[in-house]
Length: 428
Ligand SMILES: O=C(O)C1=C[C@@H](OP(=O)(O)O)[C@@H](O)[C@H](O)C1
Ligand SMILES: C=C(OP(=O)(O)O)C(=O)O
Image 1 (cartoon, protein in one colour):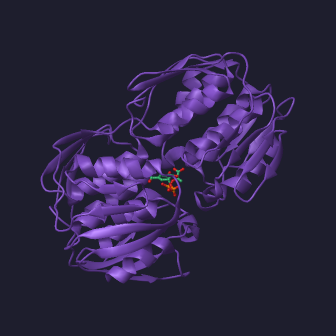
Image 2: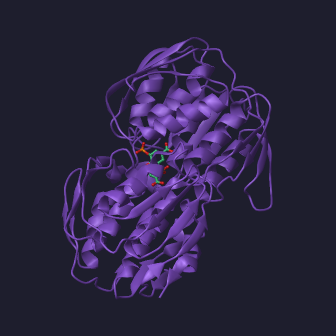
Image 3: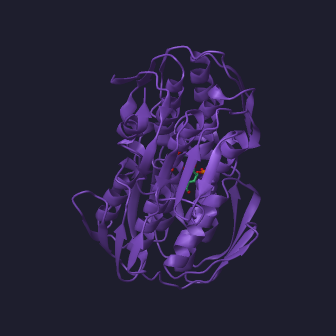
């Protein structure tokens, strides 16, 4: 196994141009494929999750040209759902933003499809989405465990209607249903059954749909009304915002060290919920400046632990867990049960690895409580094939000890060049 040794650093300083947002890249690619007209997508993320979406679209008959750097894509929309004569097996890795929306899109397309992925994807639930699609007439079968991929889908046009969906495990199921609802023959009313997690991701979905010409009536995230028989319309050109979750590591590093660090590509005008991550750093004591499309953080020399509900920013929330190593007093991150069904069981993985560097950690069913150590212990950090575990633990190198990151290349899911960017702004 490859490892990366991070030598102790004292500060970070500089500017980072963020790679494109994963959440936006995969939404835009799918809607551009379903839309009428040609779309030029710029600042597309070049990473595993997006590559899986691109490969799947090609298999589904979508024509596109990718620039040499994979960041500009000119895509010819189909003007409706997919229509494929040969059965297709789509390998979607561990990309939730590909598996969930594509499953819904395939369910309404003509053809026979098998959705496969990495072993971890077979442990990540999808039953709440299938339970919503089946009453509408979708034919989806589980090929292994009930409620989990791999899936076999016998696609066909659907009529729409009234449908309930659970949103307490992942917002991606609702996102998937919202994205296909305009293509149903008739009107649709989606009712969210119970609690909805990760709400800001629904804003990303609705905003992207609007950019492709479809308006949804959002009744306070409890129900959504969508007219049927619509066709998405290409906006012509569309630029992907910088990834706000990827920004969190650099901003937290500035809060721990001295900074300043300025990230370009996300800011107060961003549609991504994770752009609000810096508010938590501010609450901990950092100085934060927002402009529309950049964020700057400067350390003040004092970081305090916080007790926060971070359900709205589950990905960037992980960055607070390792920032907490350098805060005065304990930090508690609450309402994050669904960390358990992401790239790994992140509550368990985070607790295990934080303990290795000396923190005293309580792992609750849906929270984590972290007492920072007096001094960081040198450790080899396991990353569980989870890009965010690897990126979060780069922050532990602010202690006076070597930090070894096992399998650093797992950042390729969303940020293949992360460690070189981190090294570029690091000062020993
Ligand atoms: O819709 C999206 O783009 C995402 C939604 C979130 O998932 P959940 O809704 O499962 O929390 C987030 O963790 C994931 O990285 C991306
Ligand atoms: C949870 C994540 O990914 P996915 O889109 O696969 O759910 C993530 O990127 O942290």
